[in-house]
Length: 302
Image (tube, rainbow, N blue to C red; front, side, top):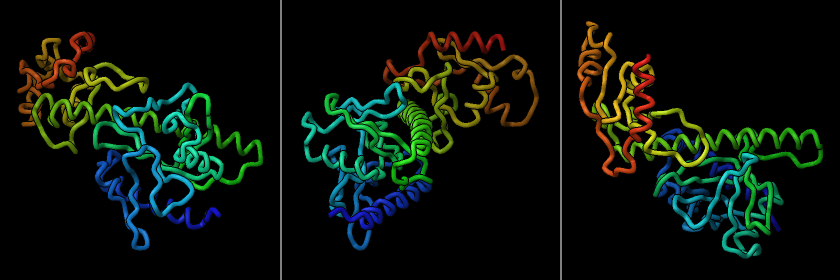
């Protein structure tokens, strides 16, 4: 018989542990940390395994987490309704792992969704719920919810159910955007070897992934539309204090070149004029020259 109280104890402990890890490490967590997990009543509870649908031994009836790995075998994706389509394990709807997920849907149990940004780097979203099961399409539908609604009320009132569905669509859309932003940052910083393209500053905590042209949260984050920049140079780039020509040469605004100020202006901005930015080693990851040309024309007009 399903022990709901025991199950809830494990899930609540997992959510509390995850919150502490995010507070300590930031949104992007290393897989090794998740695989090690935490200890509950003397028993180790990992949160991930090589399988995408994962149930630790302390649980008996439903998984604790589902994972999308980068370059994995399954084409998990967000659908037009903003919800996640999560592929079955294999092609048998009654595979034991698929039955576990189906049980979680039946019992309205909160799960953790781990989204792989790149090998060994994951963003966690919780709570997520299984809200649909398409046997023909071999997919489950997954919706994220607000952390204030980890344990949903029983179904029954139409108005309440409609409110829950609307809230989950909104929350899932926000999760989708967050995943896109984190993936863009991770990939851009990795391509630039964790250094500012302008000044070569190397402390990742103070580095951003700046867009050359405005981006949307549709599709894959494109490294060629990004520059790894420190906080100072990201702000200067966004506000057109300086621009980058299509040949990767930095141009500082004329009025700033003639301005007299302290060492930050002299060394942080003026000294960059005419220098060449650092670019990724892989040609396909280097700043798109057409994007730079469009951006540079905007800089010149500004």
